[in-house]
Length: 316
Image (cartoon, rainbow, N blue to C red; front, side):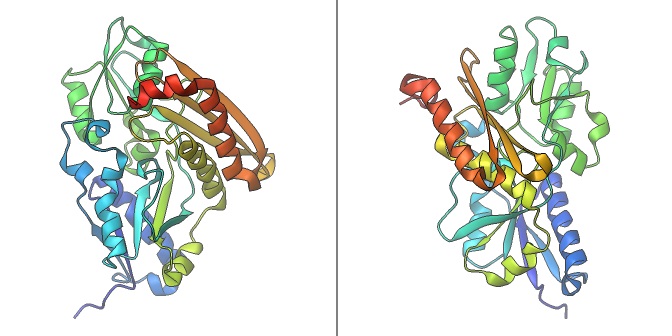
């Protein structure tokens, strides 16, 4: 009989999600000899609503919580001990009793651009069609190139690239981080710098969600957590929370550390989905104030947009 695993990691079942979970498992095995055995850490794939519904934009069916809901239910029910998430998929607010305190070192934060026309948005011909399910990308694309058409485009990496090759769209975008983790970075036409396409909050970061009262899981995860990534994503998520961010709001944010990790620079952006109005700002300060800096920047952009701007976005 095989032994019961000491730790059960819950994850979505996509190739990228499984690759991320196995990366967590590998790091845990290196950090703790008792977790290095073949059956010590189990990876449990859980099908989420977001994976089941592929023909509609996330904003139409309830937002990014659809990629975490079933996994969090398993966590609360004690069926798994930790959930492995792409932090850009984690809703702004977590269910009571759950916490995300641990993150792996962050990967490349940039957006990858795929197109037979060239490595930049500026290479696309007039009126070209771009496939993207992200309102953040859509708003920035249309702000830079109002002549382009953006259509809803979901599915895993292989599906999207197949549709692109078939000529359904002229270009599409994915996160560089995911392609690197899948070993498919060589397929990227070009990587868009944050100055051209500010990334999603938490992009490139893998977060680990546990029950807040689970001291055993916390102690194991402490050894593999990256303080720099946690500080950066904390600032970005505080910014998102202040703006009441959801999948219906085109919001982008990126925190970076400077001065040997002592200071934090946070850039943020909020836009109308059609790109006709964009408000952007940045803030810097000591890294210890990561959450406060995020809140401050959110307040600043909220004031810049005004109630009418946010009413247009939310429809209220």
